[in-house]
Length: 401
Length: 179
Image 1 (cartoon, rainbow over the protein chains, first blue to last red):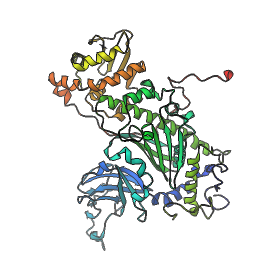
Image 2: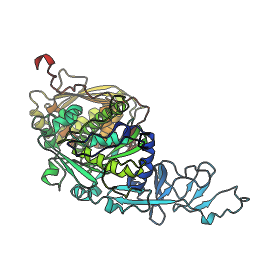
Image 3: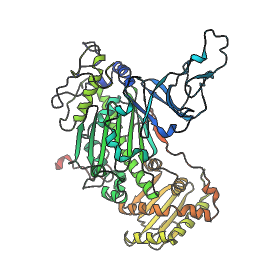
Image 4: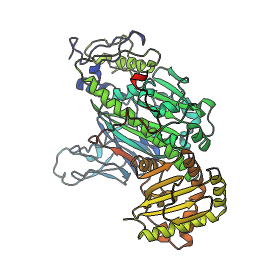
């Protein structure tokens, strides 16, 4: 606790040229983490799964959103629902993992539930007084879909998903996400605060040092940053004239050789064909639009210093083995970059615990997006930090609650 | 346990499949590509579990047991992975995982590898066709590996140590003394 009563140090926005970065205790404070869960993550839309997982009646998957256990299920009536995955009896799970069911049953004492959340039945409750199963049902949360993705919000008052995603939708149009095929992914548990991982996504300043492969694959002269209200976008152009690119691209000789074998997807604009758009939407949504397909990062805070990141890939249907191998090359390239990122995040998280580090400074021309994120997170959390104003900006998206 | 009874079983199927490919119009086009690889266009294929070694001479259009000297390319992988790749049963994430875990290893010139990748598309359909011709329904019916999987590295796993490592394709760093 600081002298002002806030769990974290104040952050003053003096513009990217003059501000310090977010103070270290924002990355290590359990009190702030709890406040973020309550006042941030419960009031946003979070991407939790894919529509193909719940395409048919009875199909379901489980997930966790801001400490709420949730089961997303396609009902017999075809309606998609997000139900509390907490049995009304003793808080056991009514569903585990994913699959298809005609009804849910808690494995603890066998209480059963219809797919719309109504209690179906149980045994051993005959002598319990004032017990009316007709009035009992699992609480329901907001659930909507966007392209191939399922989103959940715990907040019943959150704006519609289409409104929430209004800034990303125009960028996604040419990539025709509904026509791409999900081909799997990679999940890491990274010992760092969720903001550390988002911070890393916010700039290309580190690319020459952390990502030798990506650095060779991008043209340093064409790396741009654009800020919007709740989102920002970075663009990196390929090919780098020097090549070769990553381990995988280098195996094929050069980025140019790779592109000869694997031309970009059809229907893209010139800039989309020639580069990568890295789109971030407050607070954790990161969408990577590539000439070859779509890569989604799902970032889920697990604890103050543990973050789950799932990297999910979508590609056009591969016509033959050559295309499959080239898509594998893209995945290998992506995994290499992601692995480099999570490793440096792990190191920097340790650094945030140093007694001699408090905060750093921004690169004014290369860390605009990072500063943008820090403005948004501090403004959003300011009303919940013991009255200590950290920012001076009005509370932001989702109306600070 | 492998889908193949033993090395002899695997070798027999691979030689039959590759010979049929090389004798086909796709194989003739492969010879055209191979001429661009230089005077030699040799590939050594090594499988594990069961262990076999085959050599393919794309210029001559021949396949034989054993390893030729100085091949343009060498490829090593598990027999069942090769089987699943050729049947189109492994998705790009699964293939990249094989590469990352060194269960699919290439060596040779990058340009030759690019040529091999380009040839893989026309090559693959000859494998199920060969199995069918040879009455190997047992191999065609082998279970499909799980697809669209998420490969999870748990919170207790050792973290990677790749940053600051020089990659094989990177130029050596200039020493401080030379700056």
